[in-house]
Each structure stands twice: as structure tokens, then as C-alpha cells.
Figure (cartoon, rainbow, N blue to C red):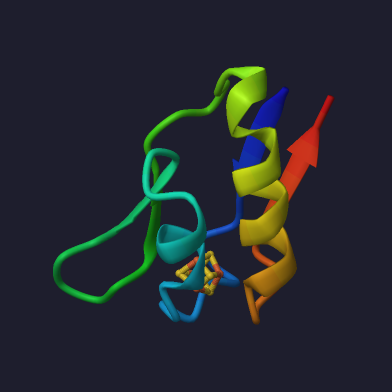
Length: 64
Ligand code: SF4
């Protein structure tokens, strides 16, 4: 699976980091999302789906 983030949409809410701290982080200065793993293992799928669900900006997608 492949995780796609759109930093232009991100409002720095940090919900994705709470849901999947292994996959997402936030920039120090403005809180915009950083992708730590573009191709995480299947074990992380539930966490990524949760992050997608809770992101208020709809800035995260999953392919595959
Ligand atoms: S939850 Fe969405 S808006 Fe918030 S930091 Fe993550 S990607 Fe950005």
C-alpha cells in the first residue's frame, strides 16, 4: 500500500500523528504533516485508515 499526503491541504491538526505515529509526523515550525513511511507494512493499515478518517482536511489518501 502507498500513503499519499497533500501538504497544501493539511491544517496541522495533528490527528494523523495521534492515530499512526509510525507513519506521520509534523514539521516543527508549522505543524504541517510529514510522511515517515510512504510504503508501510500491512500491519499499519488499520492505523493509516484511522488517520484518514480523523484528518479534518482530507489530506491523506491510500493507494493499494
Ligand atoms: S490530521 Fe490531516 S490536517 Fe492534521 S496534521 Fe494530519 S494530515 Fe494534516
